[in-house]
Length: 481
Image 1 (cartoon, rainbow, N blue to C red):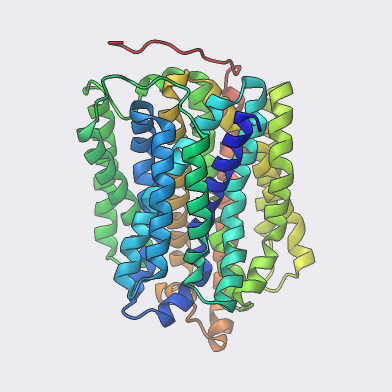
Image 2: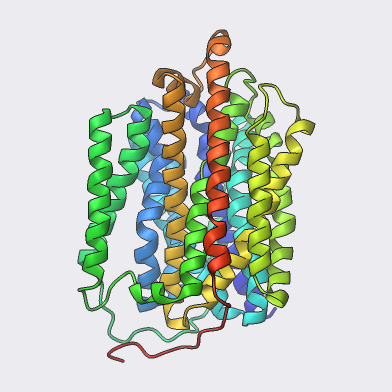
């Protein structure tokens, strides 16, 4: 097998596993809360949110570290850490242990997410990158949806612990194969330096911002504390940008943002993530909350059209964009997605599978059309020595946008429904008797969320139209080389 296909197969398995674990816990959360001793409401929230939060925080730095110490080396380390974290999660004896082991699992996922796109870009020629990154990108988004289906099946049959145990044999084999098959292509910096100050400020800022948005919206912390945390987070991130202009080896290469193609791709990616980040979360609410109260397996089946359409259109869009350029695929993808979300903003309380399939297909197809050409254009626009940090920036934008999107979703719901009702539905505690009183307001909040998502997707058209022409950027010596 050609080396490039070995790279694609291994990295796709890695991103698929890491993406599945982003959502697989969501559908199992009520069962975990009932069966795992010492699991309070805040701990349940951290089991879910901690994974996305830690992954978002470490991605940028891990991308920079991979440029310094080797992408394959840190990618293999990430697979091993992710597998060990999965094993420990399955053996957790209480809620606190599961939170800690879930954070360890997220560290491994951070190495996988931050390096997979860079390793693929190194291995594939420019005229094949769109298709390769399209397949890999599909695995991320489809994995997030598949996690709901797989989690529902496993939890309903052999128990919630197996949502973690199933990763172990796959992870062991994939770690061994990655170590044996993958190789470093880009020369590492012979004198690596770590940006410790940038790490501390960035981690503190993003943590404060995301914790303030998510927990403040849910009412886990008082409103005033939530606002204060958000303001502190924004100030810390602004300080981070200043720090990165002063340190000799910054973790965020600000020179990349002088590249028009890179900036437009990253901006569109962030806006798209803000729009779509809580998509599956809202649908799980809609399907398992009032008035439907579907079981996890049935709810997962409703999401198949999204995954199927994305899996079809993602590789096709990537392949065609390699031949004809990314611009019109990006524009058409965003327009199709916006149409799907506008349609979803009109759904009723008991729409059937047939009635929900058309808007879900549009949402999935639009994402498939957009994602791979946008990522390929972004990675091609930077020199090989910067692809690790570029990959980290892209995935940081995706994960940060997704987590903030969840906070915005909860904030919208909290303005329409009592927070106690939101928490009860989220934890699976809402009873059928309360459906009549919560159902109308709950559906109204979902309509508002999907309308907001459509608006953000249309806003992403601005950088997508503004972008320059995608050109392969050759390797360039860094200052001091």
